[in-house]
Image (tube, rainbow, N blue to C red; front, side, top):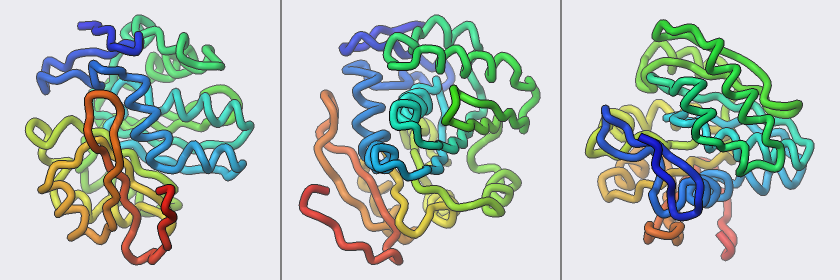
Length: 241
């Protein structure tokens, strides 16, 4: 069911998880605040640094489109890997009308075409371009798949990981210590993990998995969100962060 959120961007309701994909207080606002800015991706692209992103829970593709739009505006290359066990249809993506949120609206059409060409069987992978600067790899697989995680470990590490699965109450497998240990090994030494979830058990699991957790004020409707970096990086944190 299409739902208009408070900032006039759209989201959908998941029958499987009985939750909306984004905050009803503002889908686009939440995505930009938590993921584009919280992960440091906005700053990296602004500074012309090519960036690699892994998203756990590709969902409706909004995070990806906002990042691709930012990469296009800054003429900086972005490699984006998304994992989603049940991708939405191209028709549903078109109905969401995310192109209206972008400086380069055709990026939404590019994503719709990639999804349209995506093989239907689980475990498939589709690659394509969003505009000139964003290379997308989309895996239709459970994020906790040992086979997929092992394949990802053979590639370069990611500058940012977006942990955007549904909440721990309904999608607990993506918030366990065992899973966080797996994705910790995929993050570059000075990279960031970003998520909307600040639940105590999640923060404790992140710390046990080798992260330093930083809470900061969330967007409308969310008191706090968080980003985390690797404890082993031993990177000094500025007051602005």
